Structure formats: structure tokens, C-alpha cells
Image (cartoon, rainbow, N blue to C red; front, side, top):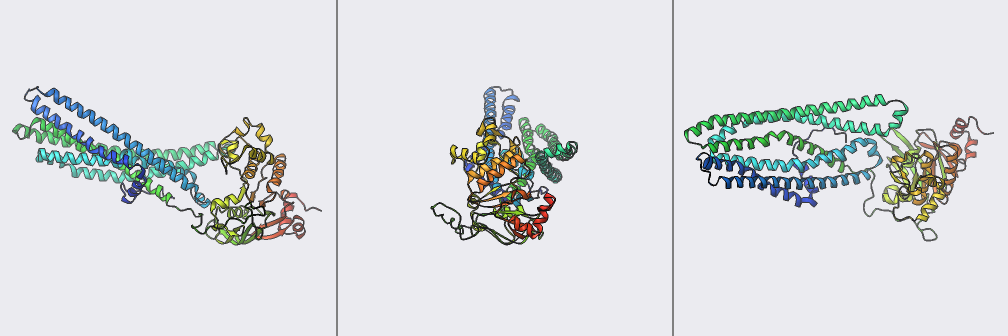
Length: 602
């Protein structure tokens, strides 16, 4: 999606067909707006002719009988024109807003289905540009783009026909400047196109930088980088401002050029038409009408620069929006008919894990985030139903990667990942992630109440008693009681009004409510104080009861009671056993223990 420098055409039939498809639910409004075009064009073109009649039949011959009625007709035409314009503008604004709303909902839903690798490649700021700015640009197709251009074409056609019908020689005087007009428009259009490309590129860069700075504002403040970040932002903002100025200069130059050519056409009309009036070949009212029609001929051309920019913006934005919608998620549900059978029922008839296969298994897995820079190399492991397994190893060895593969945030490059004996690629994603729960290291809480965050996976289906029980089991009762409003207390963005340990306790309560069959723990007790760690470990004991689990840990003191400890090194499982067995083996685990505690136990 690194396409912010793309410059599109001002009109693309393929893209317009897709936009027309999206407008299907609102085509009645579009057709209504198009139906209003000939009516408003007729009211516009009638005005100069009424002026001609007033001058030739009443003012010049000093016959004022009927002039008042003609003035009344002129006023009614003006009122009708303004009414039609208001109606047309309102209809197209409504259409544009509805289409824009539909597109944003489609984009948001599509982004929700994308895999983790997609977000690794695409900065959030750029995606926000797609959903907000690019969709807004598409809205301009309806407000001041295609419909406005169609209206201009109708008016230009009417002007040409009327002028040729009134006096073809005088019409040719006006049209003689059209070649110069075409050259001017082509000259400035090419430069405006490049200027617009730069505006879009700088806007995307500014959005990405702003989003990153706001998300990392705490780190910026801790390292006193405010001044440096301000300079970076000022540089990007200044580059955008200069690009906007450059685009504005070309628009202004095109506007002035067309205005000058229009004035030259009027001057030519006065020179040639004045002679025609003197010889009686043309009436004075006809000359005035010709001047009015000439202004109406050059007016839409004068605005062509703005309309070209609008249409180009819409086409470029459409290309990006549809490009995003056409990007399939790398991780998706299996094809229809390929879904696995539901987990075998337990003895009591309730859905439960199978006992004849490992709950979790990696078979000869190879995985790399990019190219062949392998994070996992022929890695195999298995977790039996009900077994609590800890996964340890030096930083960067791929422990979190294994958790991501089990939850199918990524797909393996080679090998297989199985849950309950079934390849995760054959599981429907919703079922897999309902079956395999995760308590991450960095707990994400949404803005809203504590209750909303606890019932995240099952809104409206969890009783107050179940919520209260989960909060108690997670050792979060004291935390909830201390918050103003209890379960209705407001959590601010990303849970910034709670400590790391408090967020972990709420995550455990959320997992208890979600009640998965298999649980993955990614450094669940990291970065917390001793008291919080005690509460979390006690809550995890209850959470893990009866479930198979795989826990990642750097602090070896937290996993010594695990049924089995796996040591990951060099992309493979190098050691496996209980704490005492691994210490006796004096291998990688023993060295890690000595690094943490300073010496091996006696």
C-alpha cells in the first residue's frame, strides 16, 4: 500500500463503474439529481434571452408595455434556478454522505479481518488516511465532481447551440479563442497534477507521523524529545503547506488565464459585434445576450481546474480505497465445506477438548516474518490436554511467535500447527479464537466501562453473577470496588488510568468470562510489583484449572511448578522437562537460571 505518490487520471471508467456499484442503494437520489440538471441548465440559459427581449422589444424602442411582466418572468426564472440549485446540492450532499458512510463501514469491517502481517506492513496513520481522507475525496465526486461536470457539459452544449443559432459569425469570434484555452488548460493541468501528487504524499506522511507521536507521547516526554518531535512535525507540516501553496498557484494561474481569455473574447465581441449592430446585422439586445452567453461559456471552463483537481483526487483516492478493499487477508476462514468437526463432547455431553490428541501441537514448523530470516526452524512441541507447559528462552528466540501461530495471527511457512488435533488452517477463525484464549503481555483495554471490557467476547450474554464471580476469581474485587462506579467506572483510552498489574487482573477476569478450552499466556506477570504478581499468580492458578495452557515467561521463578518446561533456542525446542530435571542437566535452562539468580541452587 506504499502508493501515496501515485498520480491518477481525472477519470477512470473502471473506477467509476465500481463507485456506481457502491451507489446502488442510493441510485434514486443520483438519478433525481441528474434529472434536475436540464431544468437548472434551461433556467440558466433562458436568462440572457429574456434580457435580449427586454432590450430589443421594450427598452430600445421605448415601449414599456409588458416590460414589467417580462421582468416578473425573469425573477421567476431566477427563483426557479436558485431553488433547483439548492435541491440539487442537497440531494448530492445526502448521496455523497450516504456513500461515504457505506464505504467507511466497508473499509473498517475489511480492516478488522486483516491479518497481523498486514498491520506490520502498513502504518496505522496511513490506514487512517485511507478511511478518512480518501473516502472524503470520493464524496466530492457527488458534491462537486461528476454531476457538476455533467451540468457544465449541458450548459456548454446549450450555449454553443444558442450562439450558433443567433449569429454563427459572432459565435465563431468567441470560439476562435478556444485553441488558446485548450493550450492553457493542458499546460496548467499537467503541473497541477504533479502538485496534487505531492500534496497527497505529504499528507500521508504527516498523518503517519502524528499518529506515531501521539501514541508514543509518554516515551517522548520521558526522554525530553518534545522539541525534536515538534521540529519533525513542523518540517512535515511545512512540506505539506508548501505543496498546498504550489497546487494553489497553479489553480489560481489557470483561473486567471481563463478569465483573461474570457475578457479577450468579450472585447472581440464588442469590436466585431458593435460593427454588426451599426450595420443592422445584429440587434443591441442580441449583442448583450451574446456577451452573457460568452460569460456562461467560459465560466465552467474557468472552474475546470478546481473540478479537475477534485476528480483527480477522487480517482486517486478511489484507486487506494478499492486497492485496500481488494487486498485479501492472508489469514482467512477455510473454504466452505472444509471446516473441521466440532470438538468431541466430553463425558458430560458438553463441548470439550479431545483426550486422544495433544491440545496444542507444532509439527516441524518453519516461520519467518520476512524472506528466509527464520525465527523458527523445524520447531516441534506438544501440550497434552490439561497440561500446563512453560516456554522459556533468550529474548528474540520466537516464544511470542509460537503463541501468535497457535492463535493464527500468522500462518506457518512450512509445517503444521494443530489445535485439538486439527490444523488451525482448517478451523473457522471465530471458532479457533473462541477455543484458544490469550492473556497478552500488554493488555489492551478499550474506552468504556469496566463491565464493557470484561464481557468483550460475549456482550449481552453474561449475567451479573457470572461477572462478579469472574472478578472474584481473578482477585480483582478490591480493584473494582476501589474504582468510582465499580463495574460502571470509565476506563480511558488504552486503560491509561490503570496500572499494568490492574490491567492484567482485568484481563484474567475477561479470560474467565470468555472461558476458552485452551489458554496462552504471554508474559502475564511481567513488569508488575511483588504484590500484583502474587495476586496475578493466584488468579492464574484458578484460571488454568482444567485447561491446557502454554505460558511464556522470562522470570523463571514464576514457572517452576509447571508440569513441563520447554527451552527454545535457535528456533527449536532444545530442552524439555521439569525444573529439577533441567537444572540437573546443566544446559541452557540452567544457564538462564544462573543469569537470573546469580548462582544455581545448592
